[in-house]
Image (cartoon, rainbow, N blue to C red):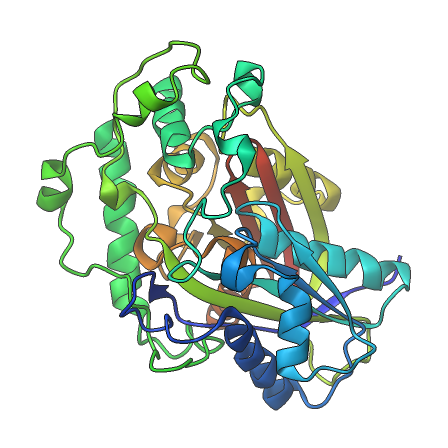
Length: 384
């Protein structure tokens, strides 16, 4: 299989998902168009064979084949194929992974891949899928809201409220300290009125976190059937959940020789399903598969972007794996900056490339995990 390169990857700042949010006035296709234009400005002209776009809530403003709408709005060539991808929180990275496979096989030479989510205009669960409330399914096949799954997982793993507070505080502190760091934000593209992250809460303290009450305990009653009557201590407060937000990210994926200076070579990509009852753990399985394909250990990875899919996931990662915390989410993570669902994988890919460049590192790892057993991971090698 041929080598595949990430020639560049860019992202929007993340805007609060509310009517007065910084990106709320822009359509999802406009968010994508601006990232495509930024890639052209940075990489020169290219003719994409395809646009692969992650998007979770494909209804309303995001219905009608989001990738096709974005292609037309961005005035990409008519010959550009389009795919709209819903793989829950891993969608944006799944799109990049599919692009990598197409280029590696020779099916394509140049692909734009990433994701978008405008949660101010298309809220979570607003597609009203019958699955969300289908009580006729076997319990383990029923939908469980991710935040409820996070509480269940934290209890099962023996993680404490103090553990959750610690990772939430670290995320906020790192995000606040680096939001204007030019090296770590070199691929964040000012979009609409936003030039910086809108969701960061710099006023967060250990004391404010400790005082915040658990926020999601009542969901256990609403989903008692799916939980088969099990109960557990509510642990996650609002600050332990990533803010809902708007955002987009896009990568230029291609074969050798597409442009003069690729930023990274894709070393391995992997996806995995997982036990839906132990929800939010499939990212760990995908990470292990990707690392196994490289023969690298976590200790050999210079920078890691591990999706903070609620505080429980990053707390579990730092507790259970032999990894240097100083190499993980160096500019803060989702708990501080937010989770625009279909876009997150592409945004974290862009963030990873910036972090690798800033430290002069060689290997980077990005890991996405989502509800109901969804996970994806990718290992890259920086090109110097």
